[in-house]
Length: 159
Image 1 (tube, rainbow, N blue to C red):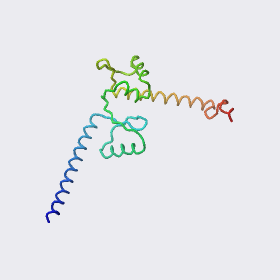
Image 2: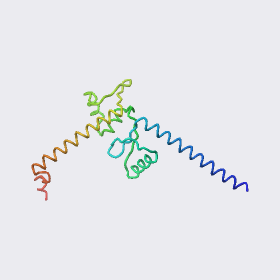
Image 3: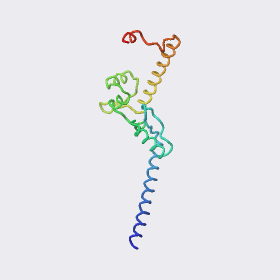
Image 4: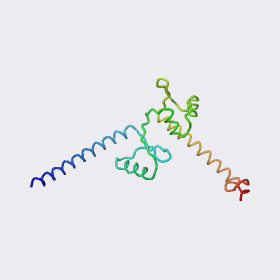
């Protein structure tokens, strides 16, 4: 009879450990949400973390399963110029030019520039909005002129 009793107590101990870990993870997730961390998913769009740990894990795993990257980023995280340029999809030297024009705030750590993630995200949102507006304006003008769906003559000559 002893092995059956050991088996039951092992199951109870395992269940207790799982519950403890679950509570600890939930508490950590609640604290993470309080820091206003963002989830960067498809197209590097920053989103608030989902309300529950299970919703967060579902979204994260779903994005990863679909082949998309996901990043959790604290808004006060300090990024290097290399990290920020990779995130923005531009060369480091182009980013340095933007920093020198004060288009994106930065601060110095010794002799190195650092950018807060919130400032990089704000710049990206502003840039993406301006790009979208420009494309919308271009499509609207071409539609008004009746040239939106026309193929240029130089593309027709190869047929």
